[in-house]
Amino acid sequence: MKKLPLLTALAAALFAVSIAFVAQADEKDDHEESDAITEASLPAAVQATLKAHAAGATFKKASLDNEDGVKAYEVDMKGADGQSFEFVINADGQLVEMEENVKEGSIPSSISQGLKDLTPTGKTEELVRKTLVVYEVEREVGNKTYELTFDANGTILKIKCENEGDDD
Image 1 (cartoon, rainbow, N blue to C red):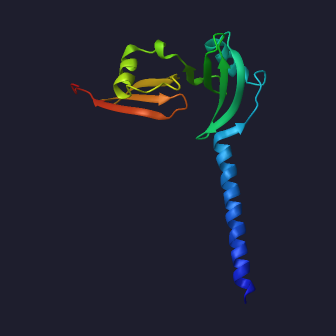
Image 2: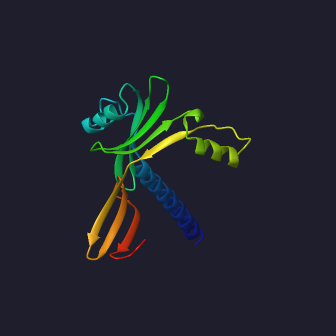
């Protein structure tokens, strides 16, 4: 009889470990597909997008990520002036996002003033300009007009609906 509780506890522990292992494997699948992708092994469409947006920049590294079921390449580049860039590009070559490290003197004065107002004694550790690709669509359905905004992966970011004759 004493062996039954011990066996039950052992089985429960093994089950918990196996669940944790499966969850960890699933999490890896959701975020990072692979590491150490070379520039030459990137799909031609991704290479073409990089050439269009980062001509003259040096390839640093790339990885294939899987976020919410959408595969995209994350590519780090360095410009001739040492400036860092990060691109997120779908396998079909569609630019999803671009990040560019910038110097504080190159940002709009309204942002500089906002920084001074919010954190007057603060020191900027990193400053990144982010460009997201979005699609805005206006569609008429009956007497309604829909204004829809999607990200490059098809996720709806904003929906606005107006009835014909509304004065907004």
